[in-house]
Image 1 (cartoon, helix red, strand yellow):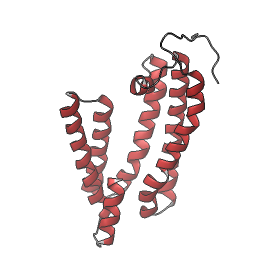
Image 2 (tube, helix red, strand yellow):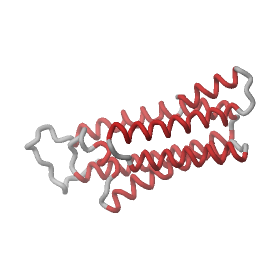
Image 3 (spheres, rainbow, N blue to C red):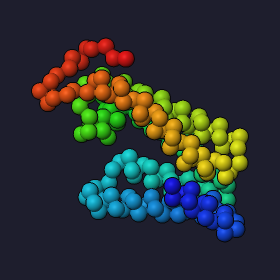
Image 4 (cartoon, rainbow, N blue to C red):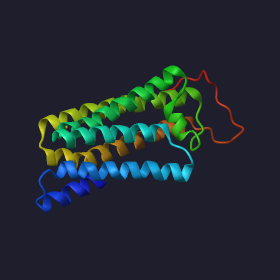
Length: 184
């Protein structure tokens, strides 16, 4: 949101290179967010550090080379990384989705694995969509799509997972679910 608002504000002001300045504003906000997280939680989240580093590298390269493609690559790189982490976590027994949401949901292991694989595939789809959009549309369309395209797609995907989550949620603390159950 900050990136999109900054970009449009700068464009309306007639600023040359609005995408680079908006990227720098976003990068500073990401580093401030990382610092706030450290102060608030007393530690750094590995995923937040990774994301902030990718933001810093892509924005820095875009600004240094005055090439917006580095900014266009960021969502692709991030979504591929998240997809690999989500699916790789299932394969290594360190389910990223469960680590992030485990306190909020009580699901059997196989349901967590299914959910992580679904999210992993979704992240790969988002990476493909980003590649298609930036290669086939202009800069302003891509900037707007980051907010008006990816956010609604993510919300629709998230809500589409609710029936699966509700079906496999353990209702009470004492209730158990067989690890061998078949999942949809």
